[in-house]
Length: 436
Ligand code: GDP
Ligand code: MG
Image 1 (spheres, rainbow, N blue to C red):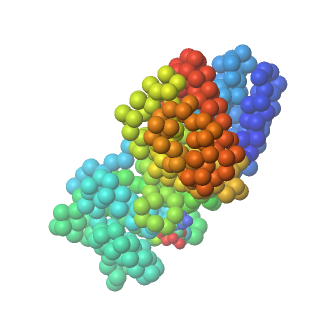
Image 2 (cartoon, rainbow, N blue to C red):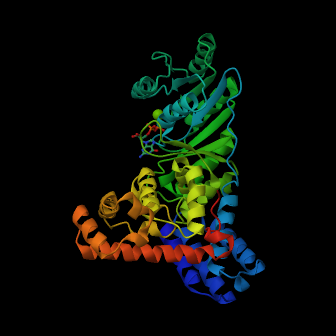
Image 3 (cartoon, rainbow, N blue to C red):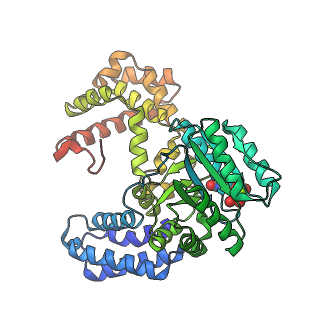
């Protein structure tokens, strides 16, 4: 989906002027991309009609950067369609009771483990998980293994063939053990089935859950919507969990499900490790779908590592055009601290795809570091000090040849000039749209 949308925007990005005609074309491309990603035709049409209306209304045609404004409109609409802001998830109650429902193989048992782990580690709760799948003995074993892994007690009754009584007994036991959340993992079938629905509905009736989460495999596309509808008609669930959002799984299901059942998506899950559960943020998902890179997490990641003090000092130095080699070296080290360089670059809009097949590793910095390390502190602080004689010494010290040192010095000077030019822009050359 992302690639298709990217190409839909490509035209716009390259065009300084925009006409009504190419808005219409772009909107058509977006619609096609959505439909290709399993978004229901009707939903895709309604969505793109709204985008078109907004684009014309917000005078995209006359704006300074029409491409960006268009992207923003699509992103805002996507965010809105997926629920706007992150939905509440309630774990109040004594205990809070969370009922998990969905088809077999959708990832219910795995999610039960992940949710228990999340509530325990992130929310300081003491959960208990319940194996209410009475048809497959292996299901009890599976949950038992997960429970041991995350250090959460598992309630099961191997000889009891009544899922409702297992659930009720589990809640009693949880109270006795002072557990404040009970997560009930239920049995699923391969397809929607009356017996399964009746059983889950009966459990719901008996335990009066705080939350009923419908778990759905994000890779099942259009089928996911039909399943969601059937479960919602019967259970009136409180939220959706999208699983198997690994790697580049298309986001189409998120869109269609939210639109069709009008229930919030509360969690997204990827991978089989217990700590890969995330609260669902519609805006981040919208960005991901758009192939714009997850800018929010990039900024967050950078902020975690970046020392505010240092940043301010650096900004001052840049403003006074005093940026030197020592500063540059520290910047390099900051970047390296943030993690794998390729991953980081992949989060920058448009870059991810371009560098997909390129081998980038942190060694790319090593040569530059070696050159700077071979400078004396005075030289690092006063780049102007470095004459031919010093250059020769630095080259020798760093194991580079003089041309490489020259090339680097030249690049550094150019970069400094660019920084100087940015200073003259309004806002001190800071990138608009980046939250601080
Ligand atoms: P259930 O039948 O609904 O309980 O589904 P399970 O939790 O047993 O999951 C079915 C299969 O999908 C298992 O092999 C899981 O390891 C796998 N699985 C579950 N969630 C994810 C996920 O988010 N990503 C990936 N890649 N696999 C998952
Ligand atoms: Mg299961």
